[in-house]
Every structure is written in C-alpha cells, then in structure tokens.
Image 1: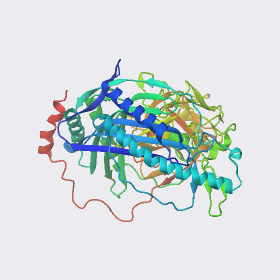
Image 2: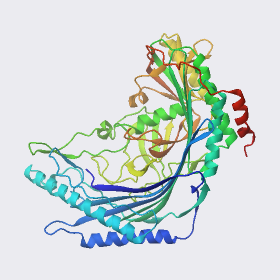
Image 3: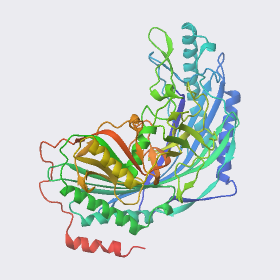
Image 4: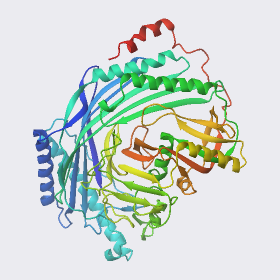
Length: 600
C-alpha cells in the first residue's frame, strides 16, 4: 500500500583479517564522497521531477530518495574457535513516489482484484561512490515505482468515483504536509581491525570449555556503520550517521528430565568502546554458565499459580516495553487503508490497533506517564541507542512528546502517513536494524516511563508477600535477572516464602496472561530506575537481534496483580544425548585457558 522499492547491493567477503567500521567521531567538513552521493541524488531527483510523465497521466507530486551507505562486520565463535568472520559493504536505497496530491494519492489502498505483475531485471548499485552508477540505479527504480504508483492511483480514483465516494468525502489524508529540513550530521568513521573482534570472540567463547554441562554455546559480535542520505522534492536534505554494536552470548543445556535450559546475554551499544572490558565479559559469561548448572539442580515447578508477581531488572523493562510498543495494540499509530471488495464497494477497513480509538481515554493506571524525548543522548552517564534528533523521513521530532499522561492516552507515535487520530508526523519514522541492512518503520526512540507512586524495592517485595497472603496463597512469585552487565540478561523464577522472604529457584515455569491491561490493575513500581537499551520490533515479525534501536528510562521493578503462572509440560521422552559431552578434556582445557591469562 506504499509504492516503494528497496534494493540492496551486497558484496560479502569471508575474511580472517580485514578492515571494517566501528568507531565514529564527529567531523567538521563535508567529504568528497558526501558531495558526490548528494549530487547524484539531487540531480536524478530534479530530472525525474521535471521529466517523468506518461502522456495523458498525472506527474508525481512527491519523490523521495533514501540511500544508506553501509559497512557491516559479523564474527562468531564457539569453544574458542571461529565459526564465521564476514565483512559486508553495500548500499541500500529506497524510492518513494506519490501520484495525486496530499489529500488523495496512490498509497493507503488495497483491493482484492488480481494484479498483473510486471517483472523487470534488477539493476545493482555500485558499492563504490560512482556518480553515474548511483544515478542509473535510481533512474530505473524510479521508473518502475512510477508505473506501479500510477496504476494504483488510477484504480483507486476510479473505484472511489464508482463507489460514490467523492475525494472531498475522504476521511483521512493520504500524506501529511511537513516543513522541509536541511540538516547534515557529518561523522568520519575510523576503521577497526577485524582481527581484534575475532580474538575477542575466541576468548569469550573459550570460557564454555570449562563447562561440559553446557551442550551448546556461541558468541556473536556484530557491528554496523552507515551514512544515511535522504532528499525529497519538497526541499528536504538530511545526512546523518547510524552505528550500532551488538554482542550476543547464547548457551543451552537440559535438565535430567529433558527440560531445555537456554539463556541469552546481549549487549547493545553505539560503538565498541562502550562495551565492558574483556575480563568483565568473561565474568558475566561464567555467571550465565553457573546459572544454567544451578537450574539443572533446581526443582521443577509443578503447580498452577494465580496471584501477584514481582518482576525486577531488565525482565521488568522488557515486559513494559512489549506492552506499550510491540504488537497491534501499541503506542504506534496505524492507518486504516481504503479497501475495495469484489462488489466494487469502497470503505475504510477496521484499524487493528484498538488504542487508536482511545485517545483521550484512560488506558493505564493513573500513576503512569509515558514521554518521548528522542533528542536525548544519554541518561545517568549511559549513552542512549534510541537518540534520534531527526527521523528517517527528514522530520525533526518535538523535544518532548507526551504519549500517556496520568494513565490517559494523549497521542501515538507516527510518521508521515496520517491516521484518524494522528494526522501529522511527530518525527518517529525510525531506522529498523537487521543483519541484512536498514529499513524504515514507525517506532520509539527515547522513552521515559514514570510512576508517581513509586516505592523502594524492599517495600515492593513486602507488598508482594502481603498480597499473596491476602489471596490465601502458600508462596509468591518473583522474576529477576542475573546481576550481570548487558542490555538483555537471563532471568529466573523464584518461589518466595511468605514467612521468611527467602527465594527458591525453580525451572520449567511460564507466564500466561500478561497484556497491556495488566498495567491498569493497580500495579506497583520501584523508585529505583533503570536505563535500558534494546531493539524493539513493533510488528513482532523481526527475527531475534533485529529491530528499532530504542532506549527506555523506567522503574527497575514492577508488581502486577492476578497473573497466571503455569508449569511447562514435561517432555514425554528423554532428549538427553546418549553419550557424554566430549568438551571438558582437562588437558585441552589447560592448554586453552592461557587465552584468559594473556588478555590485555
């Protein structure tokens, strides 16, 4: 329903020692490469704006080009040996072209009529900054998008007229008018030796050689550096850097009764120097391994629980973030498209986001306020990956945007596609990161979640016990993370004794009925706060390790009422390996342990 075409040229090389991106410093002057790329974008944009026309049809009223000049590196290792080392340099580009006008154009329209697809050979864009090559790729892509947009516009216009809906009766504009912006955030990226990343991955992954009870383990280090260029026919010109570093440690095993024990420790930062030092990372990995071994000895949860649950640390943050920004019912605006059925009727389809109709109404507990501050760079000394002073459509977001005030929904995050309740962009069209490159999606940047009636964690735990007693329960449930570094940490379930407050580790347990409205039933929050950098996937379709870089400043613990806890069904047959793990040979481990002893 948006006529865009996204192409990518990739030249992947598997290497053992190559130069790649990682660290960036702000520059003061535009480089020759910047000038060449922007000249190619502007020249092709101007030419298509003036000359792109099919006799007897409308010309495009809006064209926008996005070009992402990307360098990536990915390194992974297991048990001290490299499994992958790859450098990838490519250009992504996106053409958005609209036929019609701001009120009614080819976008936001779907029909059940079968399309006559036209396939054309794809033209690649050179990884080198070649003026002619860039323009040729833009030219052919623009041509294809124009044909598609023109076809959709004519069909949409005809169906509207035949359906007796006049353009003046359309309830929602198709595209919002925004002021043009010229901003260039110039950075010069310093190269980083891949050999150093490889050695780090080897050293970290070798820690698991000491733990034969761990059946699978892997360390993956990914880094991306990109310069993003955006121009449109309204006069906007934007250039800004994008950089992200992701370190993921995965480990898995089983209990004696074949319950899987899989743990993930993930670090997300803007640049490598923000990662913990190697010794700290090794200590964190050992904590994960020891936790898996403790879970192997922990009792299995075999009860049905319905009552209060206290979540502490990143697990509390991730739960709130998913409630508010993932799935169809999140604080992200969605558009009802104009729909055409088989009987040539034209109507607005139902909005899948139930919050859309609740602007001005209470959706959360009255103590909660949610604010967006996308221009905030850091909090309590922690750099924020969600920092975004300008969005991917060249719109400058407000310094502060209140989404929820005292539990009442005020507005939703949006880009330039209007919705019924949010007719204009508020600058939240973000770049969505994956190992394949960058795309665009509306989503959060920097979000503050504040609770007016917060209390210290110890008081919150006592309230958990009080509520469990009041409900006639024999114990309460606490969920908390391991005390390691990282953005995403392994978490465990504990049964809390109502008399002593002691915590008993259990496994094979799951939450069942958590949803947004759990935040409306008088939740409790800690006065201690947490800064949480993460990747948010609003559509829940992105694979693990991909999403919109977002930062949350929020309470460190959360107490929820009337939560259902169930045991995980026990496997019917054993899945344990028939013979023991070959990892753990003492002689080999002593040989490889020298890797740790010679760390910088």
